[in-house]
Image (cartoon, rainbow, N blue to C red; front, side):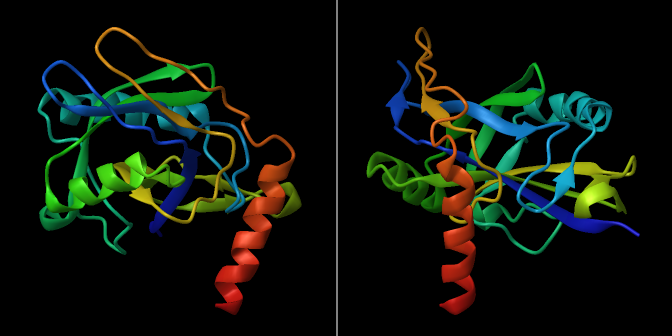
Length: 195
């Protein structure tokens, strides 16, 4: 049985605009072969297949995402905040360029990024999982990628997005918070459960 699977990566959002006035950020969207905070592991071959299929949406400018995750497998156009411009592999990381759109949700996202708010970018897809050793879950071959959304509560640490323009891409690195990421994630979970 397929379930809605959601995985999130942190990114540091500083806003840059290219020469046409578009707001762009670039960074890690997802990681294969590594356990995330939800205990899930995405096999690289499954993600490779889905990234290849996703290229069609990118070419057609339909690789849309929302501000906050809905509990749905459908992209809700009234909540769209961004469009994925390109996606590629760097080792086990899925890296992408994201254009923030001038929609109501996109404008909120842009202002949050300008204010230096640390957000997450989170994949949304449908699929099954299988138990692995150590309470891990392996994402099944039936996984179908829907896209990526911006969210406030990240589950995967160590992935950061950076601003970009047409000619310059700056990289902060993939392990900005080092050993403190897990502690930050645990504190966030505790606060969320209490609050």
